Length: 389
Image (cartoon, rainbow, N blue to C red; front, top):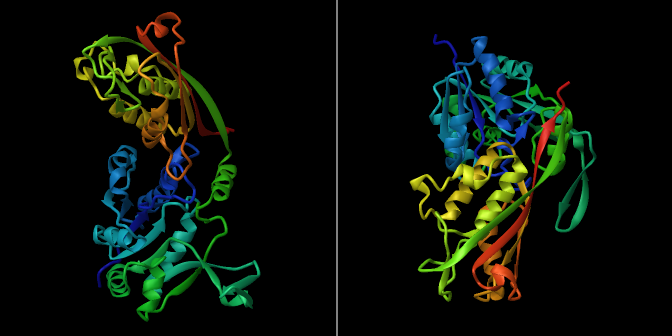
């Protein structure tokens, strides 16, 4: 008889829109992405010879980021997720090598080795097992606007990991369809038996802001905010395009002189964000001495800056800029400017985080003489730190 082999599958393919900001599975918790907490448990099981591999299902647009964080000793492979949970799970199943699988939500960072061992033991005997908890709250049912009472003894809360014989799980999901909320739903619908393993209260799923705050309190985290200032000035000359906030201004005879596209607004935004994160300015990151940045699109530079600060755990809470310009008249363009920049720096699931004003030079100084434009900006960023003892 062939020996069982186990694959540990972490499903990290969701967008986490209910929590907002960076998808929850990629947020830093005590200095590590949330998904990595579960991966460390999988690695412990691998060191003990219990699990043979780790499969992580991630959004396709996070594949490159994940490769940079996969510094695990356990043999690990990445696979792209689908549009539904079940599609993502199926991708993980088809890219795994084990005869049996533990399927786990990446947003449940506080699983234990003991829970996994119990699930594996019970699945070896019964073919499938899931962790369940009894409900401690009184339950009600809302139907057609009317509340009725239900017996909480009849209901159990489901957690992950969920453990199955792999080929049977593939068959169950294929028969049930791809709209299930967990793997047990498809398994039970197929008529197969499933064994109950006692779950753990600490094995909760990070879904809401409150869940996130609880996770932070467990790990000793605290939120900090920093504010950075950005400033830029560019000379106005003939023969150059005038590009502001990522938008080309067609009715101007003058454009801003610079090594890149000289978008003074985006340059200010970048320096403010970099300043709040404690990084050097854009002149250091994208030096004018380097020909690769000649006529560079500042929108692409901003994307690089945002990736840099977010990779360090920073979220962009708010950016506010003031552009000083004598001409052309730009007041009617302000909503377009705000939309253009907000679309680049917005945090997923949050309200717009950018504001902009335009002030005339009042015919005073170099701005008033239409020799240049000047821009100031401030950015507020936040991240979490952890107590170290």
